[in-house]
Image (cartoon, one colour):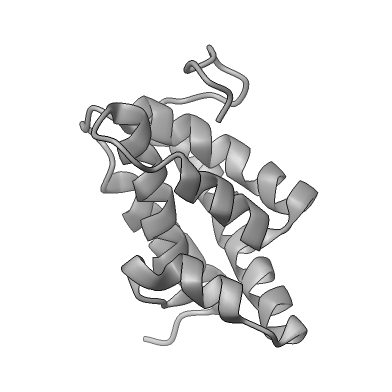
Amino acid sequence: MIETLSQQRITLAHDLVSSRLNRAEATVYGRLCHRFPMMVMQGGLLAAVLFISSKSTGSDERAKAHRAILADVARILKLDESGVVSALTRQQDALKLMAWTHEVLHTWAMMRRFAVSILKVESGGDDDGEGA
């Protein structure tokens, strides 16, 4: 059966968010799902990914949640998980970067909805500590 692009995005978003259910970092991840699109819209995809990457070191729940966001961006863009930051920084084609931003934002719209319905993390919930 052929799926529309919207159906593919919904399926991917569901799979990504569902994979975080019952994990220690699920709440932090859910909050990041709500915040990440605003980061992209305010500073661009590259800046948002660089910020998330800077927060992804360590072994605590916050770092794990930030690594999960990076992994999700890589899956959405069909990039190697370990090279998502370098792929974005090396991308010189503005149209390609715009297309990637468009794809991430459209898929992330579904991820925000699934963060509420699957992870039970509402937008604007309790702060998880350090900002994002």
